[in-house]
Length: 144
Image (cartoon, rainbow, N blue to C red):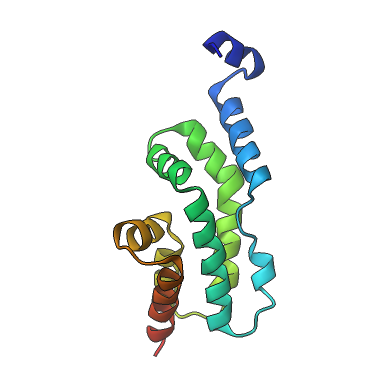
């Protein structure tokens, strides 16, 4: 495909970014926190949430690495993340952060980061299950 063909369908970079992200999220949506809201036990709720989120990160590690790199300086990436990702992540914080103290909320923020997942799993060699357990333990033990 040549550049002029691409721009015949997408008038600008923002339109292209929205179309591509829409395709990705239609095929494999970000985990929805609504399903975790009904889990009364906080430990179980955190496990369910982190398992779903870390699984999504695992399936989209290459894409997420590029998005996280580009978000620092690329306006279309910033717009796409603000429109498509930020509302979902806000839901994660609301549901998983219910009844956490300030220290636990800070650890929740850390746990939800793609970079934390990548550090624990890819760089640190933990299994997905061990990474989830590590972050749940960190949050739960910091509340004592």
